[in-house]
Length: 189
Length: 246
Image (cartoon, rainbow over all chains, first blue to last red; front, top):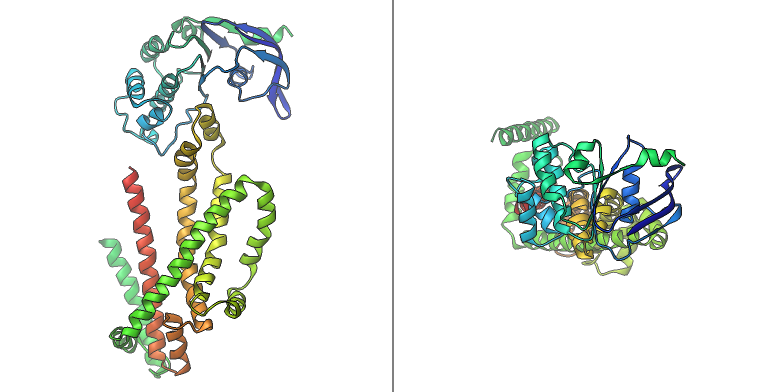
């Protein structure tokens, strides 16, 4: 179980999360919901180990391999979609996940793709990387309703634990995730 | 094709301007026009000394240039990685940049063999250009992409190959092109002052001393044409590298 106790985190001159205490299950999916600015991305970055809390403790993340779909796609612009994914996994896995993400031409470079396609390549990279924890920051950005449903069905249950930030309840339901209202939790403090 | 035609037309325009000035002055021994210069060039090109001079000058400049590219890149990487080394070495870079090339030529002329002076001068002039450009480019590598490569556990080699090298490449290529012009000009200046045997610079100097101005113009034209050729070759190599990658 991942346990955050009284975690305060943020950036120089700006504290975003204040005294957050929460437990995440070993298995399943948890969807964080909150209006912008309530620290969904910050919490994901804390879980990814990219942001050190200013105070508080975190346990249960030791030696865990974490795949993180960042808020931005962060694809290497000089590599094809296929290479962007195979660089973190095997070529076979890369092909499988690019196909699952409905990328028709994996030989394309990011600048040749639409925003939605780039998002799916970044998602394919996270899926192909694998691990014990999947962190998804607004994974369905730029996808229409039907595509979102198909992609969610393929991503769901692939990792022991998935933590994601979403904008609406429907996205959480597609992933079969329990909802964590970060804004309500923060207001309690 | 249209671009080439336009370039030729512009070249022809300036050739006519040069010719008109030469005719107006009316002293072909002191200000030769295009016919006298081309004639001198053909005469010189028929001698073995011309080709030996051209070949050895190109070799010296190329050697200094390549050493500078390698050393400049290595210095940039080390200075970017270790701030202490950067603080220690950056005054050296500032001094090299600020010192006139003629001062360096006169200084090293005392210490090195004549044949080695142009190599060292070309090296010295290109070194800070590559060093500065690569170090700045390394400092400007996208932080988001760096974070991504850490998160996805890229090996050191993968980071170098897929993040840093492509990020630095545009700045490196621009500096390499600028540096080539500097290497060429400073190398020949060093040959002129150091009177390097079997060199374009020595032939330039001789032509001036014997008041053989058509020869002086012919050698200068050779320098310009070779500079354009080298720049063209480097640009073509860069384009080929880009094409091969895609």
